[in-house]
Image (cartoon, rainbow, N blue to C red; front, side, top):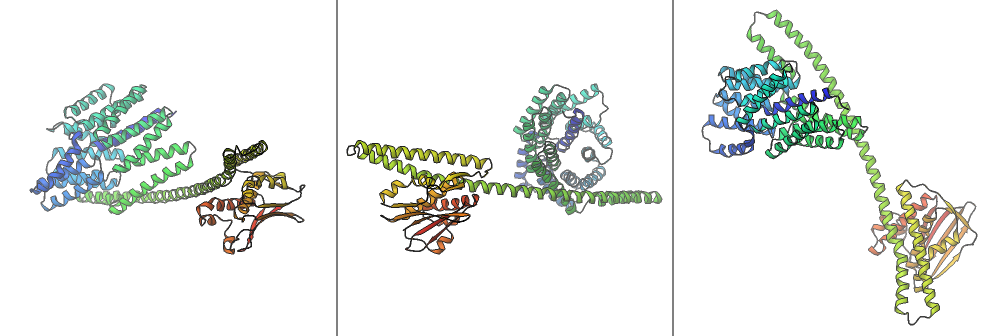
Length: 630
């Protein structure tokens, strides 16, 4: 069973990731989509540039709650206009919005935008802006685990929020306070929780109301009230889905997957993880995407399913590589962030030059170590990614090979049924038709003869079907060749029973020059299939009144069975392609089964260590040869 403390410690971290997503906008969440659409429709009619910038920033702030790419687009557009008009609040709002976008994509660039926004808010004495940025910076430090004092930022923001005219942001700040400060007493925790939930209800902030409900569910589950906690989180998921709060919905997938796996309901847990992975990719939540991919990878790795584990680790490494490329493309990484901060310290006072030099050297040393570690991790990640890709490629090749084998077997099976099963049924239909049409003209002896013929054909058909079913069964289980001793002449007689009626109708004579005592060691059903196919072709293409000759030539180690007809014959080009599947593709529809049957006969002969070939010339008939080991 999973470690409960580790499980809910992870949930505390994921709570804060959700709060980071929720905390950037405190306006009524239920109407966010409608408000975005309304603001977008009003943009063309706004003539005042300052108002236009404010609307752009508002759209960008709301957009991050669903599609984060829109957040960056509107913020950059707002910043360019605000810079032209020297509108400091518009610039600061745009910087804050861009800082939100770059969280989990480039945390150093995100911190740069937050710092720049904070300086401008302090310059223009915007208390609400200062409060929001401090909260965002504390959230960034906590989620990024960068070693800064996240609790200090959150506490400063919380104290500053007490003097704000609008208290809607306090419900978010309180939720962060509860998750960061683990030293709170139960009474103080409940007092703050109730205050935050009441503020959310007063301002109709449905996002935060759902979050507080989900927090309650997870707390109940951790306290042992598992069913009550699970029901509460499921209800939160339902509400988030109905209201379009994608960030809340994705977070509940994390909590529910942990609960399901904790209860050994693995399939439900995996379903929540895969749903969360897909939603994270769709709406651009990189921090969630990597969490879901890593959970799926670790699950399948621990459960001995390497193919699926390699698939999800390839997704994880691919996303991390994508984030790394985004950081490189931005041109702002850890080095540029550190140098920028050092520059700010230097501008504050040059009197302490020796201390600053030591600090700079220490930063450079730490930076060198960090860069070396980053390079090492990057090389290792690329190596793991390449190995995962290689194994996935090998798995795909194996699966394709198995699929080709299965398709080939199915083609053979359909051909056998279409080719060999049709003939005995045709004989049964023909005999029954004669019996029904001429019943008054037939004597008792003739009737008995027809019934004996029908019975014999039916018996041979059942025998053939038993052999066919046994062959199918052996193929499915991994076919193994088991030969048996067979009397060759009796086997040829048995194979020809399917075609006697057709031969009598065309007045074809069959001369069988094979001794009674000659035996062969082979697979009965395969050899019957080959002989039936050769006799069928001879019967089909022989002229009326023709002769089919079956002969046997004995050698020292081999015997050759030949079946000759007096048909029209074939060209050498057709003979060369006779035993390939390509030959069947060029046949008319009525001969398509026969073309496939010849290729199957060739394959069966190969399995039995035998050989099959043919000789023919136009106007001189055709001879099929089957060479068997004695």
